Length: 185
Image 1 (cartoon, rainbow, N blue to C red):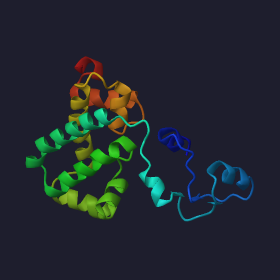
Image 2: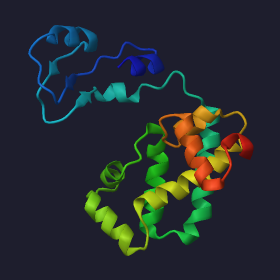
Image 3: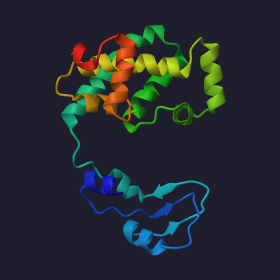
C-alpha cells in the first residue's frame, strides 16, 4: 500500500484486505493502516479496490521509457515470431508483460493464458519446448536489447527482466554470453 500510495501520490484506501493467515490480536492497527475492513484466515491474500481507483494514473510514470521498452519488446517478438509456435509466441508475449512485475513462473503465465500449469507444460512439451527454456531465451534476447540503451542501469535491466537483483541478472547474463553485462556494454 505504501508503494501504491507513493506512485499514485494519493492516499489510496482499498475496499477490503484479506490475509491467508489467522490473527486474533492487533487487527485495529491493520484497519487503521489500510483504512478499510481487514479479514484474516481467508482462502487467499487479496487487496480489493473500487473500480475508479484502478484508473488512477501512476504519477511517476515515464512515458518515454515505456515507449522505448515497448519498442524493444515488439522488436524481439517480431524477430522471434517466424520461429515460434503459436503457444510459444503467446507465452513469450505474456512473459514480457509479467517480467517487470517479477511474475515469471509457470503458474502466473498459465493463469494469464487461462490454462492449468500441467496443461501449459504438456502443450509446450508437445511442441518441443519447455517453459524455462522459453523464459531463458527471451530474457537473453531482451537483455541484449536493454543493455544497448545506456540510459538503463543494470538494476533497471534486472528489474525489467524479472530478477530480484542485479547480481542474479549478471550471473544469468554471464551464463548466456560468457560476458558480464558491463563487458557487453
